[in-house]
Image 1 (tube, rainbow, N blue to C red):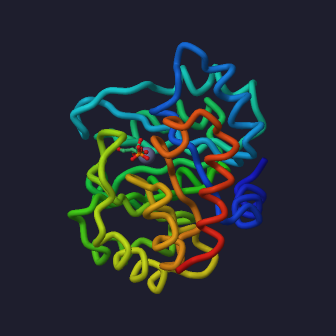
Image 2 (spheres, rainbow, N blue to C red; image 1 turned 180 degrees about the horizontal axis):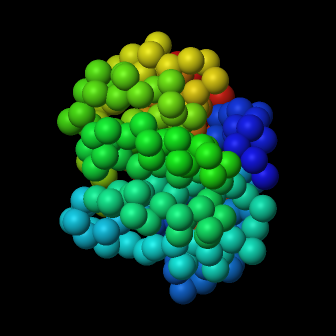
Image 3 (spheres, helix red, strand yellow; image 1 turned 90 degrees about the horizontal axis):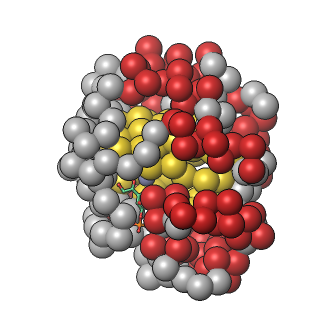
Amino acid sequence: MNRIETLQRLRDARPIIAPSMLKCDFGNLNREVERLTEAGSKLLHWDVMDGHFVPNLSYGAMLIERVRPLTDMLFDAHLMISDPAKYLDEYIKAGCEAITFHIEAVPEPVSLLRRIRDAGCVAGLALNPGTPLEVIAPFVSECDLVLVMSVQAGFGGQSFIPASVEKLKQARQMLSADTILSVDGGIGAKTIAACAGAGTDLFVAGSAVFDQSDYKLAVAELSRLASRPN
Ligand code: DX5
Ligand code: ZN
C-alpha cells in the first residue's frame, strides 16, 4: 500500500470513525480487533505516549506490530512523544499507514513530514488546544492530515473543549480540500455533529466506542451523526 492509495481509502471512507485503542481491552486484543472489524471501522488510532511529552505512558511500536497481521484496517499512530524522529522507523516497520506527531514536540516539522511521506505513509501534524493554528500554517502543504486536539493530549476520557469547533472551521479553511482534517478528544454523540459541521473528516473516539457494549451500534451511531452535520 502506498501513500496515495491510503489517502484515497481515507477519503472514500469519510466520515471516518477511528477507535482510539488507548481505551481497548488489552487483555483481549484479538477479540477487540475482531469486534471493531465487525463494527465496520476503517482505521485504528494508536495513542503512543512516552511519559515525557505527556505525563502518561501507553505502548509502543512492538504492540502495534503484533496487531498488524490481525486486520486489514488502516493504522494511524498518534505519537505523543518528545522525539518522534528517533522512533519513526519503528512505526513504519510496525505497518502504520499514517503517522501523526505534534508540532509542540517538533517546531520545525518539515523534514520529519517528508521522511514520513518518503516512506510511503500519510504524514500528519497534531496540535494541542493551546497551540494556535498560525503555528502550523507554514507547514500545511507538507501535511496529508491535520489533527486538531479537542482535549489536551495525554489521557482518554476528558471533556471536549467547545472552542475546538471554531478551530476546526478555521483549520478547514486553511487546508486544501484533499487534506484530511481530524479531531481527537471527547468525541461522542453530543460533540461529533458540530465537528462534522465544521468540515472534519476523521473522528477519533475512545470512550464513545469502548465504553459501549455494542461497538457496531456505537460506530454506526457516530457515523450517522457525523454524516448529518448541524
Ligand atoms: C488523548 C488521546 C485520545 C484519547 C481519546 O491524548 O489522543 O486519542 O484516547 O479518548 P476519548 O475519546 O475518550 O476522549
Ligand atoms: Zn489520539
